[in-house]
Length: 280
Image (cartoon, rainbow, N blue to C red; front, side, top):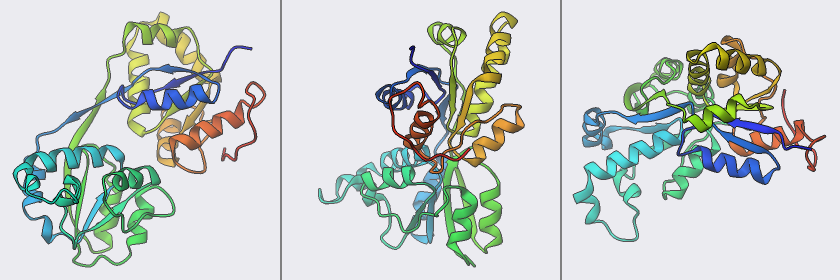
């Protein structure tokens, strides 16, 4: 029996890891990047870095924010970093010792840990609302929130409701990727499942599909009606449903590994795998 074909809509840089995990689980991944990340001018970040020791909390809501923040921070502080002890990572040297760090999600926390950054708070549920609620009373606390330009406004509002003074710094923008001819051909040839790891991946995937001629877009739209649609978490699921997709799966844990497990469980009649827990 042919392996189930699974579309991966992550960025071109991030798709290979997801594809490898799907292959290892017995799937045939189709890399179809729907988004790409464009760095923004760093003036606002550089201004925040100059007064970093005045902040109480530094909050990361994605691994992408971690990457862009430290790339820019290390670059702007290169001369200072070069004078630090070799026992201290460049990333650690950027942050004042009194600054507390919060991360939404285990993947974001793991990325910080890999850089030598201790995380002071991770919410039980990997969404911004849970993070804001878990931090509790933030009256007059200075919070630095580096993230995507089009980040959800809810988290800022909730932090402000808790009394925080929030400095939001846009690091990058998420734009529609340009698919390769090979990716378009593979998508048109058919698929059994589509993965979405962010609201922007849903929006831009559908934008790409609907911008193509009818001979491409109509068959793909038809396949989407019967394909397994899996979203990494509830925010992405809500976006997909709002845009008319029927979401089949949302894993209990909002990670790539959990998505692979959920797909394996769903397709267990076609894959030689054991049972894995999932949440429909």
